[in-house]
Image 1 (cartoon, helix red, strand yellow):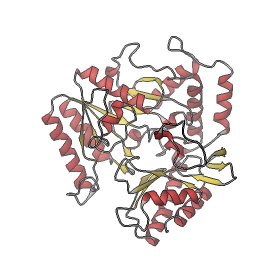
Image 2 (cartoon, helix red, strand yellow):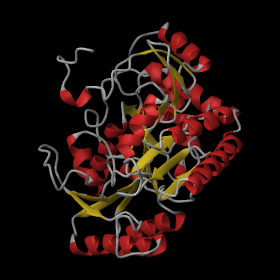
Image 3 (cartoon, rainbow, N blue to C red):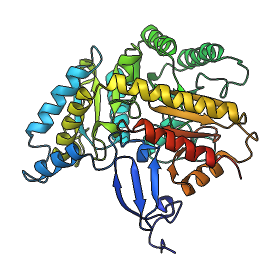
Length: 412
């Protein structure tokens, strides 16, 4: 057994697997067993492990300098900032990439809309996952009933996600969308302190619940009516997962602020926030982090964007998406205890419902791991789903083998 006594309990691994090496979407443990990564690791590794071009770029950049503080800039930092703005949805012409992870980016969004509007309260969808700092945990609404995190403003209110799973009185998604928007409208009418609304276009950690273009445009209209800010948390969706650089572009939606991380610099710490110019309201010392905008991460991010541009991402994601949908649908027909398949692009959720499958979702996750398949739990939602998030580099053969291992895990 591995000795974990020196680790805090929140970072103790769920298993005793020690990874010895990894290439692409395959990992090997110290015993030589292989694992197919259907989770993109922490839902972030969009180019797989040890991508040769990203590795080469990182080594080359490291030879120039190890680190630069906010008092200096480097060419990768400036070039990346300009490149992302040129890719951004219309109107988002200001950017801060001096951030390290998604929590930083979302906190930046909170600070900016609060400073701009001179108000404090942010509305979000219940069961979101917006980060793991005190502020972003409070904003997620998933701990509000059983735990109170001290620190931060704690100025958050919640409305239900637009799906019957969260609004049992609704039989269809369209009904749930109307009820969700009405819930937000009532919140805004009751609370004049609300200055912003933050949503994930795809609620991945909750079990892959997709916010439709019509729903996102409904949010836009509400925010316009009440003169409050609309924030898209695209930490899960930006940089290729949907076949576009941003979900906002794919869904033709128009946020005031867009946050990003994870696949911006896959495998290297970096996050960023895009915004309309009026939200450029913070001063030096208020929104730049020590390791944010690291030259190594910026260089890798630039190369990542170049790779995405040259790999015909729209075609690849469309083909892989059609294949995974076909295989999961066939799996559902053979095993009707699968309640629902939800997904888009390379992001998919398998919902087993409650007390329906012979095994619970957590048990299936554990069995899949023992069968050499890495999935992701959706503990932030109803706990009945498993998440699949496929790296952009995955092949059709690897998808087929992964689904084969998944099916082997469905029974005791």
